[in-house]
Every structure is written in C-alpha cells, then in structure tokens.
Amino acid sequence: MASNATQRLESISRHLTPGYEKSQRPKFELEDHPVDAVRSLKVAVIGAGISGVTAGVLLPAKVPGVDLTIFEKNADVGGTWIENIYPGVRCDIPANVYQSSFSPNTQWTEEFAQGPEIRAYWQKVAAKHDVYKYIQFGKKIQQATWNSSAAQWVLNIQDVKSQETIEARFDILVTAIGRFNAWKLPDYPGINEYEGHLRHSSNWDPNFDPRGKTLAVIGNGASGVQVVPELQKVVKHLDHYARSPTWIAGSFAGHERKAEPMLFSAEQLEEFQDPEKYLQYRKGIEATYWRRFAALFKDSKENRTAREEFKTIMGKRLSEKPELLDEIVPDFSPHCRRLTPGPGYLEALGKKNVSFIRTPIKRFTKTGIETVDGVHRPVDAVICSTGANIDYATPFSIISGPLDLSKAWKTDGEFGFPYSYLGVATPGFPNLFFIHGPNTSGASGTLPNSVENQVTYIARLLRKISGEGYKSLAPKKEAADDFVEFCDAFFPKTVLSENCSSWANGGVPGGRIHGLWPGSAAHVNFIRRSPRWEDFDYELSKENRSQNRFAYWGNGWTTKQLQLDSDLTGYLKVPEKVDLRDLHESWWEF
Image (tube, rainbow, N blue to C red; front, side):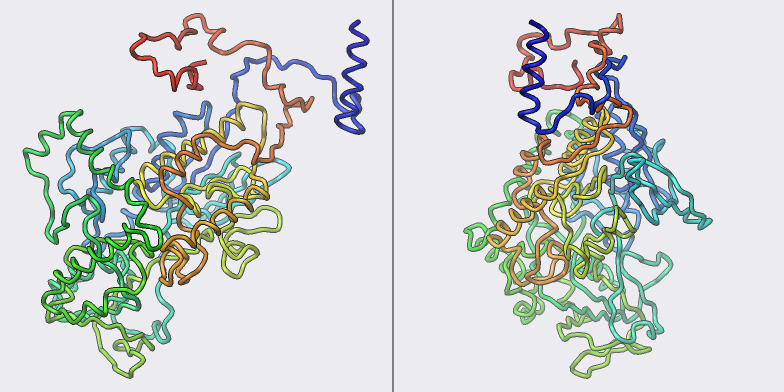
C-alpha cells in the first residue's frame, strides 16, 4: 500500500513539475532545533534621526536575535534637529503630535517647540530605551555593495575625524537618512566669487552675528519662512528673494497660530501629568491631522475652502503692505507644495526694513546679488534657504550588480526616478529597506506614526528572513511596476500634480510625485499591516542543505515547550480583557 501511494505521489509530482526527479535534491533530514529558533541577523541602520532612533527602539523589541548597529555621522542623535540651528528653527506642527506613541512627553514648554527642545526630547527617548548602545557616532557611509554569494551588504565606513575607512559586513541594510539630509547651495553664476558671509540655513554658523547688517535670504520654503522674521528683527535691511509664491496656512491644530511663543500654562502642564487627560488632549490634536486628506484632491470642497481661508489669513497678516498679497498668493492650489503656518513671516515682509523680491536672480557679484532686470543689491551676508537634494537618489553609492541607486534614481539615471516597491524596498537589491523612502508616507497623519509603521513593516520582513530559513528577499519587478502604475494613476487626481515646485515632485513642477504615498496615512497603514509575501523573491539559506522550504520547522518543538518555567497558556485571559479581533494574532505568544 505504502509503495503504491509513493508511486502515485511521484507520478503527480512529475505531472505538476515536468522533469522533477527526486534524486536531484539531497536526502531530507530533520534539523535539530525548535521551530522558533532564529538565526541572528546583523542589521545596519544608517542615520540616528527620528527614524534611526525609532528603529533602535522597535527592531530589538520586534525581531528576536537582531544584532543591530546604527551609524550616525554626527556626534549625537537628532538628525535634522542636530544640523538645523538657524534662528527661529522650530516644529511647525504641535510638538504633541511630533513625538513617539510609546514615549510621550507631557511637559513640552510650548505648543510649537523650538529646535533645541525637540532635539533634547529625541535624545531622551534614545537614552530611555537604551538606543545609544547600538550607535557608532562620527561614522559616514561611503558605499554599500551587495555581495550575492555571501548574501551580505559590504559597507565602506569613514570615520569623520580621522578620515580612515573600514569595511564591515551586514545581512540587512536599512537607510534612515531623512528627506532633507543633503542641503545644497544654489548654482547661480558667480556665487563662488561672493566675498561676504555665505551660508545655507541648514549649515548656520553659530558665530555669525547678523545684527545691524544688510542681509539677503533666498528661498521661501519652511526654513526661509522661519528665519526671515527672526532676522528682520535685528538686521539693518533684509532682501528676501522668493522665486515662487507660497501659501501661508493657519494652524493645523485647529486654532490661529501666533507669531510669539505659544507657551503652555502651569495649569495645563499639571493637568497633562494625568495620563488619561493627556491622552485625550493628544488624541484631539492628532485626530485633526488624520482628517486633512480630502483637501488634497483637485476641485474638492475642502481645497476650495482652504484657499479662501488661507487667502483671508494672509491678507490680515499683510496689513502693513497689502499690495504684496497678489505677489505672494500662488496660482496653484493649497497642498500642491508643503504648507507652513509661518507665524510672523508675512508680518515681517510688511516691515520697512524688508524688501520682497520676486525678480529672478541673474548672478552673484563680489559684493551682492544682481537680478535679471539689472538691479544690483549689495549685501553683507547671504543666507540660502534653498532646500536640499530631494530627488531621493541616495547620498552614497548603494550597489547591486550593475546598478547604483545614487545614480539610477536620478532623473538622468537608468530608472529616471526613485523606483521602489511601496517605498520600502526596490527590485534587484535584496535585504535593503528604506525608512522614509520614496512614496512612503501619506499626506495626512503624523510623521512619528508613519515611521513607527514603516519600522514595524520592516520588522515583519526581518522575522520572515531570520525565522523561516531564508538568506534574502527582494520585491519582484512586476510588483514594483504595478506599484508605480498605481501611483501614476492616483496622483493626477490630486493638487500635487499641479504646476508647483515641491519636495514631493523633486523640485520639478508637474513632475512625477515620489515624495508621498498614493493615498492617505490611514490607507498606507492599512496596506502595511501585513506584507504581501507573494510580491517577493526569496533565497533559502545555505545552511538548509536539503533546500526543503519547511526545514526550519526543525524537530517538532517550540522553545517555550523546552523551558520548564515558560507560560504556554498566554492566550488565556480574563474574559473582559479578550479582544476577539486580536485573539491568537500575537506572534510572540507562541
């Protein structure tokens, strides 16, 4: 009987897989380990800003046996809040929604926290959760190369101080380098000949004293809008060059944003120490950020309402120079480029010591700036608030086979845009994952929530690799192609596709949108709740000699069963505490 059954199975196998021969595979033998025994993964995370710190907290908690190293070029954690120290730098959304869900701060000094307080908060989170032990500071990645035979990423790591370079190997590479990491000066003719003080706002010189000087500020993005009102108060004269008009919004928190610090009262801070009251306060503010999505669509009631509200707000703030309103109000819709409340910005433009200049810059001279109309304006210093490299091409070479993402993702590269699968991975680059990669975050919700969800998704992928006998996984090309096709169908329905220059389109008006997810924040969180495993290609580990996909099942035991003091009935709870939606869903209970 057994012999006949075996013959029938082999006959069926030959029918399902033509040419299949049992002798082609080594004899299968059980591996002697529990099913939940995992191989340790060496994971490198690049960057210790908000994303890197969050990865440092969540990956060790969510991925058993992870061997984590975080590389950071600066001397401490904080990312953009370490590097941006220009006057007026602060959070343009309430600090209470710019914090982790698992480590809230009840004692923010003011509603829109200044840079140093935000930096201190994230450093405190890193210390509280023991993230510092994973971080190597003063280390800059020069190149990452995929070694396919070893199934490892080979990193060339430069010490910032000594300039010495070492090589290290990792099973997994996670980039957490931020969106605005690579600031850049504009390439105007003659800029290198200018003899005055020249700086990018993201490279502010703390020893520079602007008091009594004649200054130029180029750019009206987030940093330009923040630095102009601070400099206006102390300079002799300020020339503000703005190539494009911009929308200045009201507060996203639901009330009017003021120019002066919006301090929390002692009574509020005391009330926030009640966990339930503070939770309700946070939920009330954060909910407004999840309800903003409708305004993203063309000709929507919400977008039309926003246009009228913002124009009214801007008119009030420009009361001293009402003639500027027509110059500043854009012809593109609100949300085409990132909105900023900009308290004090429009008021500063109305002051007598500020000139608002829309005429394009022709060139720099040794003493100042000349515009295309021939007017030359001498200045003692120029502050360029001209943004960062926003094409998403990686700032260092990431190489797999013939492709280098630092080149392939540029507009003149092999792909011509940041080609990805769900913004977290890309075909042909196994075991490479992005936090805040292209098309990753929805145009609603909050940044910390987005980061936490991205790290959680990556953790699921890592558990798949370490727990099921794989050495690598990478998204299939057809899956990435379908994602790109979905993006290209979605974004033309939104105001993001209008003729404005923004970080979402890489600074190319009307260009391909790669800065945002094709949907809301709730939409992307729903999709990332569980990976589509069928969208990936896998390679089994070399240790799996039989190449049987179920070899990781081991010897039939679980680790908990072999531990005499373990709880094998964690699923049993007081009935009132049982949530049927979550019953038997927690991977760590087994």
